[in-house]
Length: 317
Ligand SMILES: NC(=O)C1=CN([C@@H]2O[C@H](COP(=O)(O)OP(=O)(O)OC[C@H]3O[C@@H](n4cnc5c(N)ncnc54)[C@H](OP(=O)(O)O)[C@@H]3O)[C@@H](O)[C@H]2O)C=CC1
Ligand SMILES: O=C[C@H](O)[C@@H](O)[C@@H](O)[C@H](O)C(=O)O
Image (cartoon, rainbow, N blue to C red; front, side, top):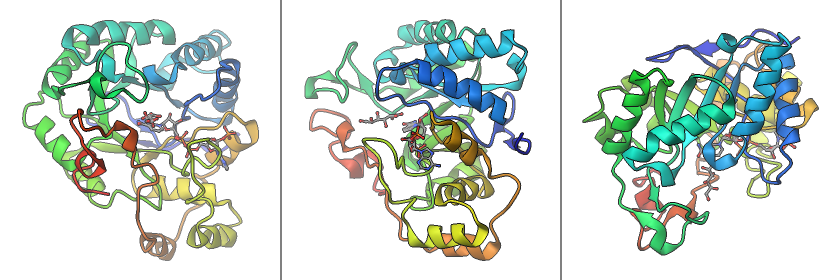
């Protein structure tokens, strides 16, 4: 068994384990999710990241039910993150979306529920949405509906995903509950040098998606695993570039959410707690030229709230 998993305290609810298993599923075979989650629990993972969008809440729920039944782990020992999809932002849709997630996950509370994107789409919209499927965003109303779900005990902590400093600032102006987490793209090639210090100052924990640049995904990139600075640090520590990227994420105070449905890589990605990067390694990594691997221009539209990636990310690109 690998070393115990480290956690970061949140401003509400339980601590968030520093590593969580991602669960984007591109081809439809749900059994690989069930197997991956059960294997990950045995390796030591205690955090699982899913979303309504991914269609993997049911498979995660099935794996958790089996793990609880077999005594592999107890409910209070795992941390489950899921996300509200953009077509469920209407306040009256939020409660039923949360209840649907709970039912698929087969649990009676969700540790962390995030607004997946600062975007609102019509019901049944395509992915990415067509031009006439965008609706005006009203984060305040959606957030208030989520705050109610916290009051009712259905969710223990709430947060956002893909929010910039500007979008968080406007949410903070009227939020009763300060978001616990902002889940964003984060790895050594996009370190979130503007957003991370802002979130730290506001007590908002940052979780990094695509923490190794999604090297194996159809939409993915090799920009992290083939970066020469990362690779040379990996060689020095006898680790892989993926492990250096993940260790960097955790060592700089953010949780990381690597997705793998492959047993060997699930274990490889977890092996980041019994060694550390030196201050000089961190300095070298801080000098890597920065750019987003995933600017997500699919969500920019002349009819949407963001016409281009500058507007989506408020110039932080
Ligand atoms: N909030 C948001 O908007 C977003 C959230 N996310 C969340 O973050 C998670 C992680 O992001 P994701 O985009 O999946 O990208 P990751 O950086 O986690 O990379 C995952 C891909 O890389 C492969 N891989 C995993 N480990 C290794 C390794 N050690 N060496 C080489 N290849 C590896 C995986 O294939 P294999 O399975 O074969 O190992 C998979 O194809 C998602 O699954 C999701 O849960 C992601 C994007 C956006
Ligand atoms: O086209 C847009 C992208 O697929 C985007 O929707 C995903 O990256 C998503 O945020 C995720 O969580 O995986």
